[in-house]
Image (cartoon, rainbow, N blue to C red; front, side):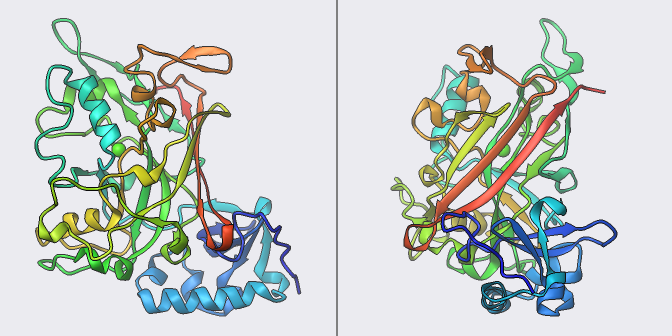
Amino acid sequence: MTRIAIPEDSPFGLANLPYGVFSTPGTAPRVGVRVADSVVDLAAGLGDDVFAAPSLNPFMAQGHARWVEVRERVLDLVSEDVPDDAVHPLDAVTLHMPFEVADYVDFYASEHHASNLGRLFRPDSEPLMPNWKHLPVGYHGRAGTVVPSGTDIVRPSGQRKGESAPTFGESRRLDIEAEVGFVVGTGSALGEPVSADDFDERVFGVVLVNDWSARDIQAWEYVPLGPFLGKSFATSVSHWVVPLLALEAARVATPPQDPEPLPYLREKNPWGLDLDLAVSWNGQVVSRPPYREMYWSPAQMLAHMTVNGASSRTGDLFASGTVSGPAKDQRGAFIELTWGGKEPVTVNGGPRTFLEDGDEVSITATAPGPSGTRIGFGDVTGRILPAR
Ligand code: CA
């Protein structure tokens, strides 16, 4: 038997207990929970085959009451001696995609980010479009190219605006978007909108997202239907899904909304999350975006996504859009941080604007836990490979 040592300041203590999918040499991927620097095999530890699946989807589909029950059982399990065959050191396992992405939606919920991009893309008009404060703007992304942290990102090629005609070639303005993603646990039927107040029943947990973006491809293609190939080549997510149940202490009020949104976007108790993100570029922190600044709440995004009767499914991922705060060093995309490339930042001693081949970007986050503790999200990391 093993008693897992948990340092007092571990962001993966008993208040967190995030879920992931791991394998060990010679064994198939299955569900585990991270405790400090160990991974606990839940199929072995709890004797429940739902955790022998290579994704969280079958467990998430069992619904909110089960999420609560299992969290209590996991807490009991890891607070005592754990059978040796159910505990693995984190550095001895391979981590995989934690859930099977059903549909992927990407929002645009930061007023700071939307205003900055408006100023950059449309300098002669109002920074926010007339719809922005009435609905959480979003688009449907590509579920099949959502990849786990650690996956290399091949620089995309495509059409770029030219002097008189477009040119084809590799993206020269490859960027990141530091976002927070929400994973739907139990879906909703076609024709049945989800109330904003049902968020806790529906949404299982939270991941970190890097929505890689090719700004030159995006700028040429996005009119009038929105993002397409400039976004769809890859979206990275973190390995650990932090349960919503671990984030009670991280809830904060959302910023005041003026004008008041339509009734379907109102919540009894509107809340956001007090997540502190950090963006590292080749190991150097260049930005610290605060999630608490986000204008639209997670529940408003889910309500909006389904208000037309669109169904939702176990494994749906909806991301917040770039998280940016009011200060320059709180901007979650390099196009914003470097003001379209005009104001380079210093990385590893040199001026930088967009991503170069070989660059590595890592986004991390922590949030308040109970009694002054911190909840960790791990990281979402990717390295840029040359175009093919
Ligand atoms: Ca995005």
